[in-house]
Length: 453
Image (tube, rainbow, N blue to C red; front, side):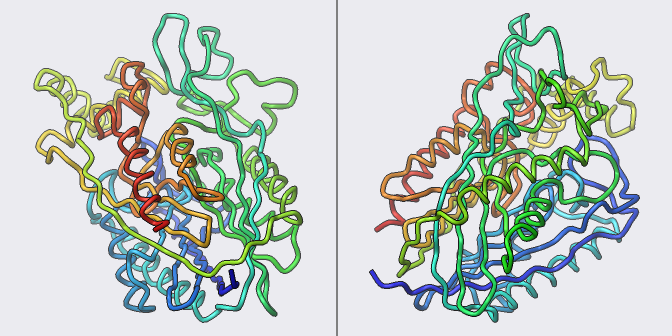
């Protein structure tokens, strides 16, 4: 096999103006400061007559309609087709809103101007990355980032299941599930240019909290990788993180350093985001010099629409859902008989039921696949549970498979089937019926198999 690979890289700052609303919670937060800048990033990969753009946005999650708009702008600027644009959000919970949750548009002037700016910057970095294309060789390796991602769903002593039940909660019986601590690194060494490192790891970037803008640990990971490795640029893609986060519910010794208990019972802190970034960076450094170099003579891509059944409520359920939804929208959460994470769960569940009351029975969701030689990326337009990630990674014939969340859309949680009976925030808020996760694995394996032909 002959090596036939070119790689380019670019990024631009997209830090929003102060006063813009922050995404990520079911409560209003207004940006009043900046801890670190937000970016859009692009890595162009070319082999023969095909070019793929791997694009990352420091954002909680970008809805499909905005992704389609952004891709159109990139295509018009570069000529790269939409199906060859792999566009993901990092999932920081300290970035700006793009409209109300699940809304197709916004009327806020700050958000409108910000979205316009992000669109232009995405087109810019796509163009610059292509102009930066240089002959390259690719090395691939895998390491571990231990004890920074934790299951966030727990079986309680009363038999119920809860998401984020609180640090040192005496009613916790056992975690439900496990984490995937694998870190995959793609190293692109370019002729007469900086190397480009692509990092893939799965964990929830909801560590910072508060009202100040930050890219959370994914952005800090990029910074630390570049500080640790001379003449290197970094781009990050998040994995199947829907049921894991940073919260160690049984902290020991210094585990709780630089953290505080937030409004919803989760422990957070910017210092802990730095810690996670350093651990993930450590995993990158462990494998960086020992990646296995492979020749690449082809890249492939596809974009596939999969019909996903909607998780609609019954008429009886809708009565209480409308009541809770109206109270929440009126700013009267204190009249809803729940607190902390259970309040968030009930509010999210009610919003889901009301939102889908008159919706279609199926969502038509895009699942993208890209391969660079024998390394495959699979883009999921929402937040998949770890079980989906593990299932997709079992695709046959690939050296590595990288499932990426919040790619080509941010349409909600994809929980495993058994979690619907167990309960918890993710399943109760999900707009998709039980069995969707297993359907995604099935379709994902079919898509990746077809990509190899």
